[in-house]
Length: 97
Image (cartoon, rainbow, N blue to C red):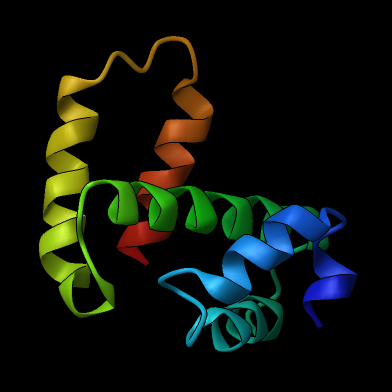
C-alpha cells in the first residue's frame, strides 16, 4: 500500500523502519477509509515520518509517544515557524488526530 501512496523509497524506508513502523500501514489505511485524497495522505505520512525522526533525535522511543508529543508541541512553540507555517501546522494537526 505504501508504494502506491509514497513515491519516495527513502520516505517509505524511514516509515517502515522508524518509531512508527508498527502503526504506519494501519494509519494509511485509516486515512484512505476516511476519504483523504492521495495527496493529503502523502503529506500526512511525510509529516508523520518527520515527527518520528524528531522523536528519535530527541531521545524518545516508541513507548514515549505521549510524552514525545507534549515535548514536540512545546518545541513547536519555541521554534520559528514563519518559514514553513503550513508544514509545521500540518505536522501538529496530524499528530493531534
